[in-house]
Each structure stands twice: as C-alpha cells, then as structure tokens.
Image (tube, rainbow, N blue to C red; front, top):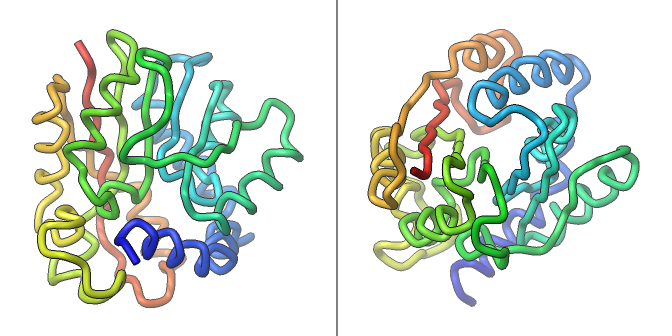
Length: 225
C-alpha cells in the first residue's frame, strides 16, 4: 500500500468525526466569522476563481463560496468527498467538489486566481512538487494561501504507518518558516507568515479536538509575479 493510499484511507475513516467537530454548534458561527476574516485578507476581491486543495469536508470551500468566490474543492479521501458533496448540493452557488490530488491537480494552467488550503501542507507527500504545480495553475498576480502550524514538532510518529524516510517532509517541521520556504523555492514572491491570534483565542476558550494541543496557527501567503 503506497503512502498516498494510506493517507486517503486514514482521512476517509476519520471523515464523520472530523466533520462533526468542525460543525460544533457552540462555536460554528464564531469560527465562520473569524475564518472569513482570515481568508478575506489573503484573497483577491470576489469574485475570484479559487482552488481549495485537500478540501476535506469542505470547510474552507464553503466559507469562500459564501464570500462570493467561484470555488473548486479537491480531495482524494472518499469519505470527506461524500460529506462535502452532500453539503454542496444544498448550498446555492456552492463550491464544486471533485476528486483531485493536492500534489498534482488535474487543472488547466492559469485557471485560478488563488490556491488555498487549511491543514494541508504538513500532509503533502511532496510539498515542493505540489507548490510548483499550484504556481502553474495561477494567473499572473495570483496567490497561494495556506493555513497550518507545526503540529508535530516532536515527530509525527506512526500516524500514517511506517512512512518512508523523506516523505511528508513538513509533518515534522519545527518552524512555520519551513512552510514559507517551500513557497519561496517555487518562485512565489512577497511570501508572508501571519500568526492567527484570533483563532488561538477561540481555541483557548472552546478547546481543540481530542488528542490535540492548543497552539498558534499561521497564514502563509505568496504571490505569483
């Protein structure tokens, strides 16, 4: 079984509980307001064409569609896609949800104004290849905007089994600058790292998913010239 298949199965199995946590009623509206502000600072004005890589159950895709963008969300985990598609069918002008590989999206060059993702960089089997592919999908002036953190600074362990050495290089990142450097190596300019203090305060007040620690998340952005 190759690594990507293992990752797909892991997230398919986790899809129901993961989505239920995203939809917690006690903080759902608070999350929506905070995350809409995060993404609004990163993206061009609506209406932009946006690709959400590793969309999962569609959290980012639905927020951005709600902001007026034309959004396509892609993922390889069947369980996540099923949840996202069912929700998209109920949303007027909702995102398109498609099967797609975040590392190698099957999309036309220069077809998007932005490529976005949340909690995706650390789980990419080859981040350098992925970001290089995203840059080719961007129109001139388009942006890559990723939210992530150093979730496993002490080592990711066997979350995805016994992964080969060198795979998932950002999973064990000790600094968010490793993610920023990935964007720089792909030729993106104006690369910036913004700490998400509002998200941190929400997590301190309402807690995080079981087995996770409260920690600072970051918005990492870069622009195609």
